[in-house]
Amino acid sequence: MTLISLDEARALLLADVAPVEAEILPIAECGGRTLAADIVAARDQPPDPVSAMDGYAVREAEAVAGAGLRVIGDAPAGTPFGGSLTPGTAVRIATGGVVPQGAGRVVIQEIVERDGETIRIVAPPGAASYVRPAGCDFAAGQLLVAAGEMLTPARLGLAAAANRGTLQVRRRPRVAIFASGDELREPGSELAPGTIVNSAAYALAELVTAWGGTAIRHPILPDDRRQCTEQISAGLDADIILPLGGASVGERDVLRPVLESFGARMVFERISVQPGKPCWHARLPDGRLVLGLPGNPASAFVCAHLLLKPLMLALLGRAEPDRLVAAVLTQGMPEGADREVYWRARLRADGAGRLEVTPDERQDSSLQTPLASANALIRRLPNAPPAAAGDLADVLIIGGL
Figure 1 (spheres, helix red, strand yellow):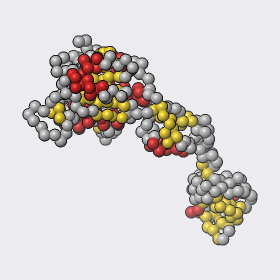
Figure 2 (tube, one colour; figure 1 turned 45 degrees about the horizontal axis):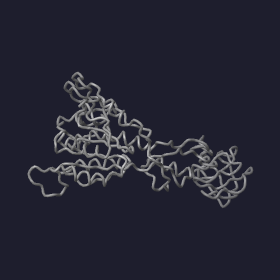
Figure 3 (cartoon, helix red, strand yellow; figure 1 turned 90 degrees about the horizontal axis):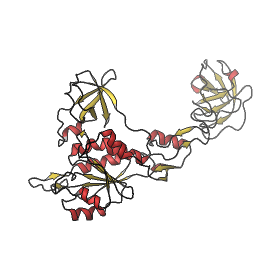
Figure 4 (spheres, one colour; figure 1 turned 180 degrees about the vertical axis):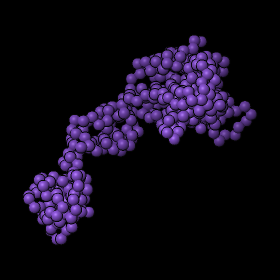
């Protein structure tokens, strides 16, 4: 079977993939979703000049130490003063209150003495006007959040500030996860000799959720073609079919023949990546996508970042694909293998803010403890020369710093 590079595999995987359809939801349900239509401001924010402090709105010429002014009204937040300032007058104003006509600044209450309806400014007001101009946050017609952006808490707050009660977002892609193998048991089971806990499906389901999708974990598939056919046919209602394992060439590996019986067309069968050589991709006649990942938990996890995540972002129409970053190696690395290799590693910022990365020496694809402590993957290109401590390395971030 021909091995293709990761770049070739990604290009084939993402070819002709269109975003899933959009849906309109109340803004309270849109956190973490991907925006399907631009949010453009319909008005200025704030729509009027407002006070940045509690104090008194006064005319610019009268904002001087020693000035005595008559208070003619109040401008609390939400209730503007209905008149205009005339010489010798002031309006009591709260933070967020609309600055009255004729006022040029707000004098903070800390430098004002009040006696009944009269105030006196007892200290120089300083240069700050404490007036927020109309439109200082955003202006009518301004693009606030672009389609393809994920609605983070701050972006969701901005959409709310734009007075949007509903938003058009991409629906969550559905990912059907099929772990396979007679040796697998669910967590909490009684384990007999030779059995293995099905851990990969749970890790992959959490990744799918974190990346904006809906994960559907199906029962473990046995190494039996008839039973696999029945279980898979009942679980094809998904955008991505994600088999884990069961894709080698042994007679007990039946996943590919089963999917081919449903009309799946094989696109690629092996990739030149370590870990992850057994990754494969097929497409069903109706366009649904099949992405086969290795059965080893660490391999499946790494390859999910390399292939599944870009596929999900494409289905969401996301605007920010992952990029490799440069980090300084804290220790040397051996010469590269004949395939592209992704080392589990720890990434941190040193005291000067420089990114440092430390490869984990435990790279066996069956080990999960190195994966649990990793927040990055170091990319080593095929036949790369040995690297020394202090050299720069390309790093894919997979967790928080």
